Amino acid sequence: MIQNNVESKLPSNIDISQLKTVLERFMSYPDSRIKDFLVEREIRRIQIQAQIFKNLTIFSIDRSKSLSKSYELLLKGFEKDKSSFRDLTKTFLQNSNSISSFLNSELTTTKMFQESERIRVAYHDIIKTLTNVSDNLEDRIREFKIQKFDLNREALNLQSDAKYAQAECVVLSGCFGVFLGFMAGMGVGSYMVPFDGGVVFLSTVLASMGAGSIFGQILEEKINKSARNRTAKADKIYEKVDYVNKIVEDVETFKSGVQTFEKFWTGHVDYLTNVQQIIENSSKGNIDLKPINTQSIFSDWNRAKNSLYNYGINVEGLRIWH
Image 1 (cartoon, rainbow, N blue to C red):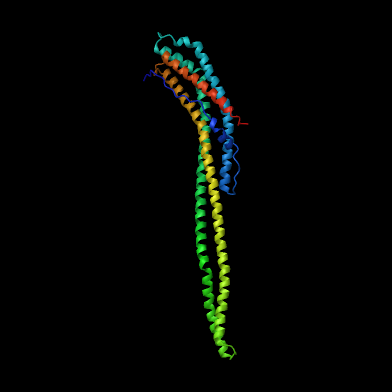
Image 2: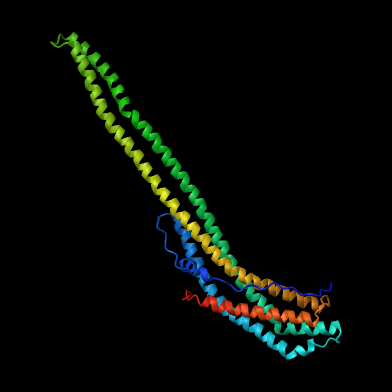
């Protein structure tokens, strides 16, 4: 199938002026504020990805300059041979093969594609890892919330138990006092002890109830203390949830920043894929590369060259890589 128009997707110049603060925080992410193995592990992974991102971006700056020069060499070569593309009297096959041979010289575009794809994949891998970090932290948040729920439920049950602890102790002690009083009253009657059995009975019951009341207060305070301890633990878990939620928000922001770089290099990969397709089709005679089409291609090359050059200048200009 012959195409009369060559369409290519070019990456736009990267705009990261608003990302400087985000990237600086990403590359200097602090250690965990809480003692939790999983959270500490995931924060360490964030720090490692930040270092990888930094090294990769320094590398990408260097390669963007190199790739820009590769485009420039292709354009200079085109300027020398452009007269061969102006002769409209040449046959389609002659014209097409001439262009295909030129584009394939020294496998320039293939090397450019491989370098751009390597950088794109590396940025994508960082995004995948950060996504996994975010997922693991979300799982940990759910576990924290379950722990918090259980502690609050236990605290409420203990508070409910504490309300009845003293009364139950008084009642039980009173019952025990009745038994002791009854036994004591019987003893007074049997041994003709000069004490009123009723007084002994009542005294024994009241003493038991008093002791039960004191014990009940102690038990109530102990239960309330346990409830307060569980509430305090629940509050600390709430602080953990709040802290880890903020980490997840940070990770999503960092992902967005890295995606900006991935998108830029994906644009170049897509464009070079298109160029390689043009080369393949032209060598088979499946595409009509007329002079007007070739001029459009080289105009795109010039835009791609400038885009890469601007990337190198703008990203390096952030001055956060050393």
